[in-house]
Each structure stands twice: as structure tokens, then as C-alpha cells.
Length: 504
Image (cartoon, rainbow, N blue to C red; front, side, top):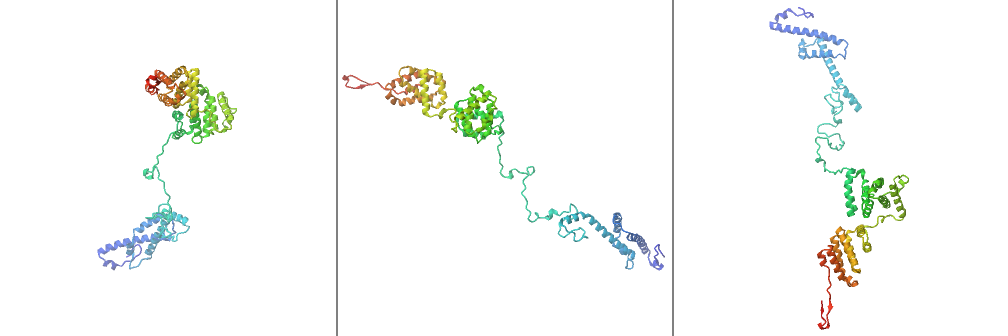
């Protein structure tokens, strides 16, 4: 008996087999025939030229290889040996499998190997390694993902903070971080932000400060108040407002303003700020002259005083030579130039505004008040006397005027001086120029010095009583002040028959 491959089987061997064995043998025979057919095809593939680029054929072969395991090969073994075809089939399977594995690993790790070689400068020691690793402890990604660089620059790993010698900089907390805690960043400093004053608010704020300064005359307090304000680029406006207000005031106010500008120069106000301020006032002279006709002369004195106090530069006047069209501004600059030429040897023009108020010596004030009373006794003009007393600007020293007026009455002869002084004190009392306290202090001083005055004026007590009664009748003094007036009892000697007893 022969099959289509030419295999001979004896008849006696077939007879000895049972029916069950015949079925098993026929099944095994069919499987053997199929495998030999496949072996013949594989042998044709292995002997033909190989094409490495054909992957679909290898995949198909891999599927075929997976369908036949070692058990099938053992079944093909007859009498303990492989046929040449079966051995060739087994070797072809091993070569194809190793070739596919090498191709897959090389294509997957080609990029990683090229990067690692470019960084280290060394080639892989084992080119046939499945992972293409250079060393056992190389910390590279084993998943085949990423750029192929070592983890954390070669300093990664569990419980590792970084490479040896690495210094981490302190990271500043980000305010936009949702976990940012302001209270945990240390002491919080709160700064008071003062908005800059505009022109309208600046005028409303500066005017009360200057008016109050005219009362107390303390430049340090003004400096402290200005430091609390944010004047900004309008800082020069303070000087122009102070000068404008002083032009409408008294001579003492102008003197205080000059002192204030001198003290603030170099601290809060620079020479440039002063120059801008006086330049603005020169431009506003046509409006200022409507309220103050003497504004050009006063402004010239301000400029001269500021230059003498080194608040303005010496070149301030030179900048306006031949460039001024306004007659009022030209008059102010000419006035300043004349004062500076007259006081060239003096560093400060201290008396440019005169000496006024409480800054004058006491002897000078007493002399002025005596002159005022004598002129009044000659002219009899109450308005002029009141104007002169107001110009002295010493309301705290008016008790000296009352004292001098009463003493002048005691030293005068006739009733004319008494009547005129009562009229003068009454006018000052009604206008409020002399207060009750100043009036009482003036009369009380005369009461205290009356014994000494009586040495020069023998009839001082009688004249004093008459003058006090007239003042009380005109409501110049109070009844209590009249009762305090000292009196001297009249003494006379009786006749000799009385025994020389002195009677009062």
C-alpha cells in the first residue's frame, strides 16, 4: 500500500490494528500529511532569497508557528528521529523568530540609542541587547516612551532629592497661586497712600494753614502739615498762595510769609519751585492790583527778600531783562533790583517790611504809644488814633496805652486833657480795640504806682478820683474798678484851744 508521497505500509501491520487504532492512525496520518505539505512549502521559502522589508509574510509565518508547538514536533518524530524536512522546518522557525525580535527591538529603541549615544559619546556595549541598554544601572525609561533621556537627569529615584551637590534656589510665592496665604508670608506692612491734590483742593487746604500761621507764626508746624499732604507737581502753588494772601494782609503777615519761604527753602521747596511761584504771581499782577493797588511794590520787596534769603537764585532778575511787556511786572522787578542794589553789603533784608507786632522792643512800643497820645491831644482825631493803634499790632500790650493815658492826665493841667482822654478811652472801649482785661490792667497799674506819682504830682489823688468818676459815668470802667481807686483823707489842724489834736 502506498500513499501519494510514496510511503509503503505492510498489510500485516494494518491487520493487527484494531478498529479504534485504525481511527487514531488515520487521524495521525492526515495530520502528518498536512505537516509534510507545509514543510515542503517552508523549505521553499527558506531556500528562496529573503526580503527583510516584508513584514506581513513573517507575521503570517509567526501565526503558523504559533499553531504548532513542541508536542506536534514530538508527534512527527517516528522511531525517535526527525526527518531532514522536519529539522529544517524547526531551524527556519527559530531563525525567523529571532530575526523578527531583533528587528522589533532595533526599530523601537533606535531613537533612544541615538540620543543616549549623543549624550554619553559611547556606543552600546551589547548591540544585541533586547532593550539596547548600556549598563545594568542605567535609569532609562523601560516603557519605550519619552525622548529617551534619563529620569530627572540621572538623579531620579524613590526617596531621592536630586543629584549630589545640587543647590535649590528659594522660590518666591506666587500671589496668583490658589494656595497663597498672605498672612503666612511674614509681617504685613500697611502703607497709607495719600492722593495728590488738584488745584481746587490745594487752595482749600492751603488757605486755612496760612491763615492759622499768621496767628501763631510757627514755621515748624506748617512744615509738619505740608509733609502730610501730597502736593505732587503743584508744590510751587503753596508759595504763590501764601504770597497772595499776605498781599491782602498786614505788614506783619508779609514778614511772616518771607520767613516761612526762607525756612521751607531747601526742605520742602526748591529754588525751581520758588521761581515758578513768583513767575506765576508776576503774571497775575493785573488781577492782584484790583484788590491791592500797591501789589507791584510789595511783590518787588518779596522778590528782593527771597533773593537775600537765598530762596531764589541770583539769576532770577536776569531772566526777565528785556522780556517783560506788562508794566506792573516791570515795576515789581525794578523795585527788587533797587532794593538789592541798596542792600548789597547786607546778606538779609530783615527790615524790608519793617518791624511790627510783638517783635518790636518794649521801649519802642512805649514811645510809639506816647507819640500817638500826644498827636491825639493836638489834633483830636479819633480815627487817626485808632488807625495808628491797630498798625502797632500789639493787642496784648494795649494796657500800656491805658496806663500812659491816665498818667498823662495826671501830669496835665486843666480839664481839657481829662475830657479828651475819657472820650478816647470810650471810643476804644466801644469798638472793642481795648478789652475789659486790658482796661482793668492799665488802671490797676496806675493805682499801684499812685504813691510814687504823688511825689511829682501833689494833687494826683484828687485828679485821679475825678478822672475815675468820669470814666465810670461814660461806662468805660466798671463800678468795682472805680471802688478800687485809692483815696487820701483830708487832714487839718484845729485851733490851739483844742489842744493840738489832729482831726480828719
